[in-house]
Image (cartoon, rainbow over all chains, first blue to last red; front, side, top):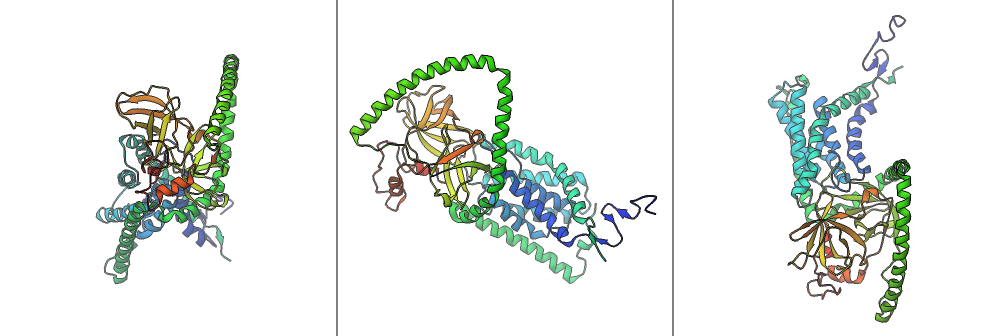
Length: 184
Length: 313
């Protein structure tokens, strides 16, 4: 069989016989990727304006949308606490806002159980824009009109980046579940 | 796509309870987050040790990217240099002639300055930097403009110390970790810095607008004496900064002052130095419990507690 088609006995996660996904990888990849996305923007020097949307939140939303039920409902609080250490926001702002985002998605999902990509994008976009505004308000700085203007591209970018990040999360999910462990 | 059917609770008591617990925990998380948020808005330093630890962890990675950043800037500048080398050479030669003359004049002024300072019994304003380090990162996703510095309390950096580049003021140390510290950049909308015009003593405050420019607010209202192109330097009021360090160049005139562009842009600097607080004793006095009664130690009329101390978070 394999001589005719080497992929005959495999699916997108790899060979099926005698193999299992790595239990560590299954658990770590979602949390690890969100935490990495929270910490990475620190490496840029942004002296005049916020340059990037909050990648941590976008990844959290994407994992929540792409794999409903994988992250527990309360996952926003610990991941938000980690994000607060790096983001420059006062400690507690992401704990609050990410928890609220997770609850909001859960409520929306119970209300509209049948959903597709466009609805996911709409939900993620609305949540990302509300988060953008709320995090500016609670940032501890007085919100000036100029500040809102230079931060506006950030909101636009977070809406436009969602599909790309959702694809990336889907790829990460395939990596997470790929059968790398040999049983025998 | 419908959610997986295993997530519907149905009549299972266990599933109902676990869904309920999920909501309860998430709600508790939000409430705790709100409490922490209020606490850290009220007491900004409350979580400084935690953030310092996190900063220490990312600093090694940041040092690598900072080195790469300065190398790539030099690379592109090198390429650009080939295209206008000839005309630039002639212009530089002319500028060099002028600069030599000005330098000689400055030497004379410096000598005179030294003599007058000697007469007054003032100590020299220059002080040795506490630490020299790279800016390794910043808060690129937030509305706040903080930068991370690759030197912390282990090299003697303390909160409040000014951070200067070779061109001028970058900002002030806000929190320190062991091997990293967090700098409040001038462009942050909570940053206030007492400044004066370089050529005379027009006194103003330079406030960050949050969009990379500084609002220069004159203290004495009336006819606005500022002109486009004026250089603003630190006045030394408030006691944090040594007087005469370049801060901003006026780019636009407004009724109450002007809009200034930064002289020292953090993204364009390679190494910065942390210098000790200029008048540490005076600052301690100003921020001490008797701050209301203490007479302002600086000769400038702008050294009200709003001066350098207003740049607190």
